[in-house]
Image (cartoon, rainbow, N blue to C red; front, top):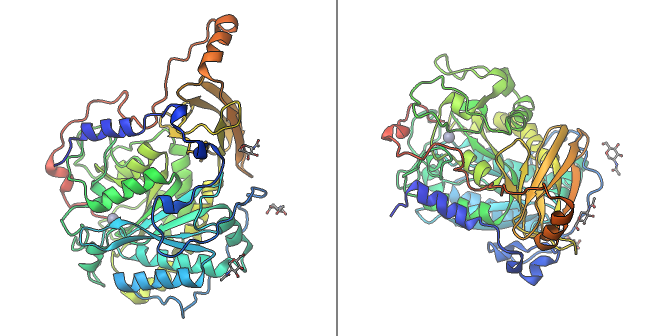
Length: 495
Ligand SMILES: *[C@@H]1O[C@H](CO)[C@@H](O)[C@H](O)[C@H]1NC(C)=O
Ligand SMILES: *[C@@H]1O[C@H](CO)[C@@H](O)[C@H](O)[C@H]1NC(C)=O
Ligand SMILES: *[C@@H]1O[C@H](CO)[C@@H](O)[C@H](O)[C@H]1NC(C)=O
Ligand SMILES: [Zn+2]
């Protein structure tokens, strides 16, 4: 049974209600990093995570040119069994840098593997961002899947020799899901550049139309692959994400959908987020570091060309139920869609060229998780405030703190105001500045509401805090969700 979209939204709102501070268990009040096995079972025995401190977050250096370790990973396509073997072999060979877990199974029972690459693969590093790449959500878009396997190889084999990669892995946990649609991949054919065979999961659903939607009701029956992602990103707070596709050469950024009801035309209106400057910047980082994307050359004469190799999703073509809008609106994760090949499933001998074109982009994009503001929300005794609701003033899509009170938000240089709201505390606004060179560290202490009420009664009679922020209640000020015509499924635009 498919709950109506509105019900899905209401459930999402309910799930994200801020718990009273008393609901935070004593052990969660310590600033101890969690061990992910509580969330997802790792494929191997426990490893020893490390806790690192921030000292230098410069992202100025370039990664060295990668010389692939052909013995470990050749430039060929890997089916599910081969991919599984490769991931297991990598965790065996690099036990201090990698951990393998499954977020669930595909409709046909294939594991949805995630490999974490980090100096702390088994444990979240306090104060440091978790980021992710997702490949192969469309099963026949196969290049991203292999690029992610090579990214893994590049990261683990460069850690000991490349200071930039060492810095990245010492300060970031990179979760890599090479194939979200292994069933679709199994039904796809190498050498097939266009068409839809293998695009869908084994039940015929387009997984990138299967998420709750900000603008419209999505009546599609939720699929196991989609559920696995929703569960995953509700348990690990990702700061930044890229979803790899094929069929075009462009970075597409939210929103994918639009409040406008009609979307038949190719040249639609842009549907911009309040973080449009950040999304454009992230997209340009990828496109500008890519071998050819920023030239904006059309894949075919009949295809669109994209200025600087980036586009707003809805301006290209609107869609309902996409993954990137869901990441951003529901979880405050900045996700973009990376279209990395004109041909969806090119012959294997072309894979090396795709790697060369994307290698720098994939690294530089992830490092952007260290741009902006980050810190902790605490009570007066220094305990973390979990699920505090945060918003950058003027940007109406919010985000929340983790159970350790941590938060991150990617922002470009400038002056901002952080608005903090948490049940039982006096809301607080904090001014801060972002510079280019390093992230801004910002710790905020909230005062309990009761004491503050006395204080404000005597000192601040005019103070008014009547605007609970609603970062995960994406309905406010929107026209009501309306059932949507079947035309969303039209396969005109299929990248
Ligand atoms: C921090 O990064 C800058 C720029 O790359 C570098 O010059 C400096 O030596 C680094 N400092 C430390 C402590 O690593
Ligand atoms: C992993 O780290 C431990 C502790 O630092 C070290 O003793 C061990 O040699 C490392 N193992 C590998 C394979 O690098
Ligand atoms: C912010 O709070 C965290 C957690 O208590 C602490 O480790 C860190 O040193 C603080 N940073 C600053 C700049 O005060
Ligand atoms: Zn696609």
